[in-house]
Image 1 (cartoon, rainbow, N blue to C red):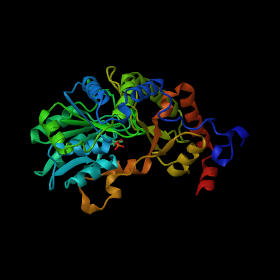
Image 2 (image 1 turned 60 degrees about the vertical axis):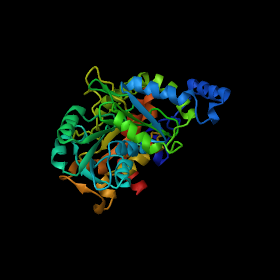
Image 3 (image 1 turned 45 degrees about the horizontal axis):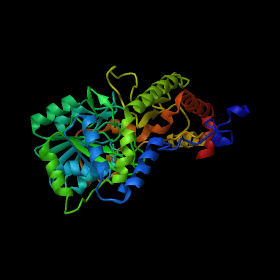
Length: 395
Ligand SMILES: *Cc1c(COP(=O)(O)O)cnc(C)c1O
C-alpha cells in the first residue's frame, strides 16, 4: 500500500488535517448579545427582556400562539406530556428507535411506553402501525423527526383526532425545518425543541414547548410555577439563542446542500458486488421544493449487505482517526430496557436494523463546505480499501 493510502488508524496522516469542527464555533452576534447582558445586568437577573423576546420570536417563527421556555429538551418533553394530561396508568406510543429520554420521560410520569417499528422507506416512526398500537389506555403519541427526515404529520393528526389522543411532536433534531408547509414542532397538539449543547440552536442547555392550545400551556404553567419557576431558561441563555434563530433558516439550507453533496458522493462508494457501503437513512433529494429539512445528524446505514470485513465500531474508530466525527447511532429502546417497562405493538425488525447498523455524522462539518464533504468520502474510501488490516488492528 502506498503511504498516502495508509489510513490514519494504521499510522497514516489524517485526511482531515484539523479535528472535527468545534461546536458552537465562533459567533460574533453571540459575543455581542453576551456583552449586552453584561451591560444591562441581565446576566445576573431573574427577569429581563431576553426571555420575553425569545418567546415572541419562537411563536412568530413557528406560527404558534404559545411558547414556554424551559431548562432542556428533556424537560420540555416531560412538560409536554403533562400538558396533554398523560398520567399514571396511561400508555404513550413512540418509535422503538427514538431518543432515550423520551422513553424515560414516559416512565417518569408513571405511564407505559408502547413501542412500534419504524418505516424502512423513511427510517422514521411507521405511521401505518399506529392504529394497531392504540388501546383504550393510549393517551398520547410521541413523534420524533430524526436524522433530517420527518414523519408525515397529517395522517398522525387524523388518527389521533379519531381516537381522541394527543400528539407530541419532537422537533429537537429538526429545529427550524419546514415540512409539508409547516415548521417542525408546530403541527402536533404540542411540540418541543432542545437548545442543548450539540443542537442546531444552542445555549448549552435549554428547551421550549410550543402549542396553539391555551389549555395545554395553562396546565404546563400550573406545573412549573411554584411561586418560583421550577424549569427555567435564563436570561443569558435566551440572549444567545435569539441571534441563532435569526440565522437558522440560512444555516439549515447550507447543511442541506452539504448532505445532498455528501449523499451523491457516497453513492459511488460500493462493495465489489455493487452494494452501497454507507447508505443514507434519509434521501436528501426526496424533499419537495418548498420543504426545508434540518439536519442535526446525518444517519447512515453501515454496510447494509454486510460485505465488508470491518465492524461498525471499527469503522467509526477509523473515521475518528481521520478526524471525522462519525459514531454509532443510539440504541433501540426495546433492547436497552427491561421488558417489564414497556409494551410492544408488532415486531420491530427495522428498529433492530438501526440498532445494529446506524452511524451518525455530527452536523458541524456540514457548514464547512465542499472540501469537507469530499474529505469525509475520501476517508471512508481509504478505510474500505484497507478494511481487513484495520479489522485486525482494532479487534
Ligand atoms: C436532544 C434531544 C432531546 C432532548 O434534548 P436535551 O435538551 O438534550 O434534553 C429530545 N429528543 C430528541 C430527538 C433529541 O435529539
